[in-house]
Image (cartoon, rainbow, N blue to C red; front, side, top):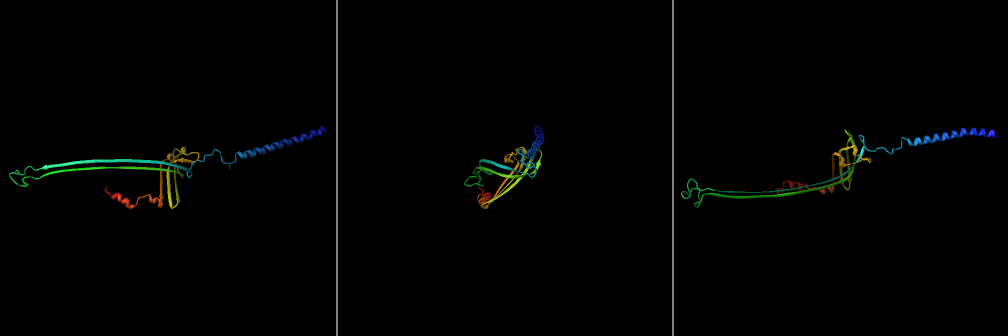
Length: 214
């Protein structure tokens, strides 16, 4: 009886070992597929634009202030005092060119004065975001980017165009870059509509400013 029991245990031991090896192999396969799945997104992948055609976002923060003061002042005075004491003969000897015994004389005085001045002040603030596309890759990992945007609302339309050069190092991990980090940048905003027309001078006012002598 004891011999038969040992025989059964000797038969079950290989089965148990085989079962353990099978379960371990299955777990290893599942773990490998989970860790090395090509379809899974990498936790350290770089989403920054770096190829031609890639898109990044420019955060436009521009504050411009300009002022100019001019002042001009000028004055001029002149005078002429001339007279003829005698012409060929003294006034007592001859009345030629005389009137009541006096020869012609001239006394002129003139004075001019001008004073003028001007003051020009301008302040602009723009805060917005604009998506641009990489057009070319320049040396030293610099990108030539360009983008345009058109919006319309309430009868008003606004066009925005941006073009410039950005360094790869200035692009953040969120795939954004600030406008003040761009080189050779051109930012243009134009608006059309009834509201924009109200802020512009009419043609008559412009023409009058050109011909107004004062």
